[in-house]
Image 1 (spheres, rainbow, N blue to C red):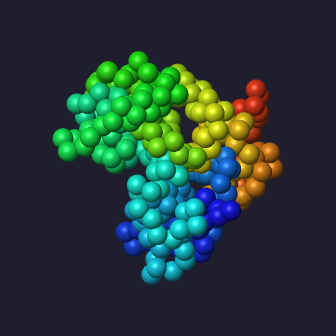
Image 2: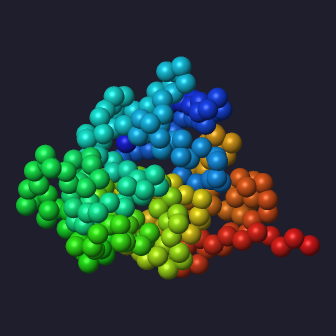
Length: 262
């Protein structure tokens, strides 16, 4: 079986600066993985490389998704649903939550005039909203939703294709504590339903118990990669952030704090 994602010796240059530095990483189908690291470490560039918004420098190195080195986004959505922070800006149109979710079938942000929406599409979109505890948002206009509600509709849009995996880029960014916690609870329900996650984050609290592998990034490189229980330690995180960090785990969730400064 071909890996879900495979990067070999990939270097990315953005604005004359190195955004990824000779990165090689393989993620198998069926894995739940967290890509974790400080701001500016290269996580977003890694996501943009997978979505083909960025290409390896000088066309050196290789990027393959599900065994293909060339793909279009419509084919990709059926394998890997992608939700990035940049898409949140489009969740402010004068369309309903249901129509916004349905628009995932067309790669648009709202149902436009030429598109024909079938009853099956609407059923799948409603099912996606319900999976995120967002069925009540079906008839609400997306430009009236809170950030947390908008994020649910955006994820539902990615789920309409019933992909086997979701790539979530910083899913709780801009959400308050309550909204973020409720969203993570909904995401756990999706995990339990058989959808796998690639979670990109810099919050240890978002590394759910179902995530069994963590890839750490620093300075645009892979810093460490391995089983969650081995990677997520106070020592490793202190080295990653280059400051003393105390990492604890309670109720299967991680919590981190800086070592008190004398």
